[in-house]
Length: 155
Ligand SMILES: [Zn+2]
Ligand SMILES: [Zn+2]
Image 1 (cartoon, rainbow, N blue to C red):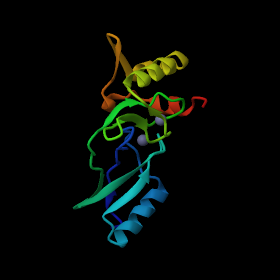
Image 2: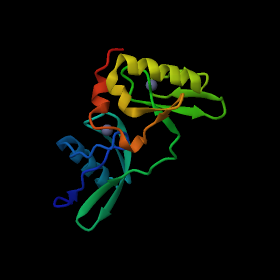
Image 3: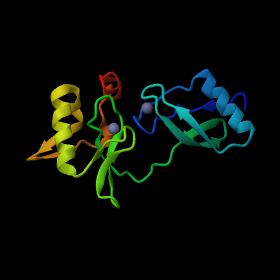
């Protein structure tokens, strides 16, 4: 176990590729010692946590997350929130589980997007206007540094 190498994981939220801290390496060793199949790790960039499956091949340990079905429509247009707007198909509302904001319909989401862009120009990078409608960029292509800028917004 001592000479096994851990492949740097990708954060499931911001896709940042990072090196495990010494503490995380130790936690991982502990999980392996108790035969754990998964581990929760916090991303040093966006500070969100992901549960990774621990995969062992020969000399390497790989941390992999399973992509869930992606219901995310937009980056959340609320100050300092790095969550996402998702549609709750049962309740017919739109909400962000990170900050708890709800929107009655898409028009309301679009209004919030216009406001946040006015307030913070860096938000322009994750929304696109298509005619009168706002669309999201592909959420795999959120620009580098976006989350830290949002983290620094005033609430
Ligand atoms: Zn991250
Ligand atoms: Zn939010």
